[in-house]
Length: 279
Image (tube, rainbow, N blue to C red):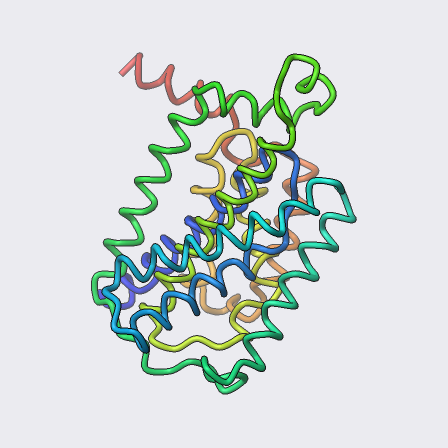
């Protein structure tokens, strides 16, 4: 039972991280900085609780806000570039963050940050955040801002012609994605009680990318599904645990050939709605 709780808790954190990647992805920004934002949130919240005595919830929120502010600053130069250059910028940022924490003695440097207060209700907090994010994305999708973000992702020129502020839309998406990643990092830090820079390498950002693409990029339910399923599969099939990244790579290749829009697409949602009406 404890093992099942542990796995589902990690799955909840992965869902948060997948959604943090998804919102800038809506506007066409493919970010490999999410693990870096996660590290900022993890270390920021851990310092609050372990060194300053701040309660858990305010500490996690502080980590999220700190990551969001850094995301806002990073988003300013990121607005001017796209494609492979944006990938390189965000990848470099993630590595810079990891190296900074690796050399920062105040948070344990390369040895890691131990003795972080344990939060035994991490699973409840993680899925409370997931529910809040689902409500947020559901309302965002139907809002004017949500349509503006989607328009920017579809065609920036056409979106600008109809009056969408490209700069503010992209910057908002990037900052909100960083904030969500920071929240995920804060939750993770207080669940594992120990964090180190190697936990936030670029390959973790690639994992969040895989979760999103596998689940689907047309609607927010895709990253939720992808993160949950791809977290549970390696855990319940321990024989392939060491081949996790190879499995993810194979899944990406297969998905790009068979179903580029991911498992959960708009057609899937419409089919489910029809079945529910029939029932």
